[in-house]
Image (tube, rainbow, N blue to C red):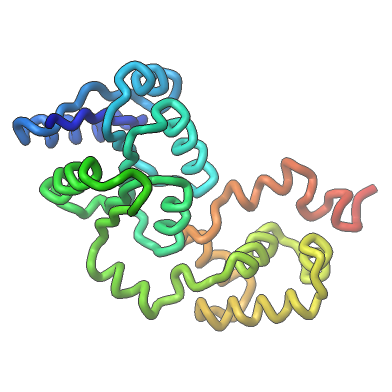
Length: 233
């Protein structure tokens, strides 16, 4: 059985590189088209209905969600494979929740890429997320701070990155100020830092939070200086 594949990415060299790799493998995998993300990709996906869609995602989670949603809407029955440079556990978990079928680190070999494509079409849809990552990254996840923050702690950290005080965070999240302080203490201990600025820098570096998560508050009027923070006019 021939596996029909479509490549979706804004980087022409990336698409052409994958096309070259997959085309050189002989029978079994056929790239039926490739396009930059956007309307061209949507039209291609709807027309070709491939078994597998391969895309590159090296962006924050809000942008990743948008890309994945558009692909899913255009070709709901395709298996979705994501290639990325990021290797932290929170990013893997978040993309898995968005409905991807395979998560492949860019250090993976072409043989691994082909093997995972073939595995995807054998597995029942929605049963598993196939993950290919460097062994060192997986081992680091077991004892490192990556992915260790709870959803509530991550939410507190986003507000910290937006510049809100403990009192403002407590008001925003309907918590006691003492609870916010306790969450911050837990965050500092888990990620090995001693200040708000260090925690924010590490969270952005490790992709626990994205720039869009920080800036969207300013767009919806919930950031510092807005009418919601008690200092509006």
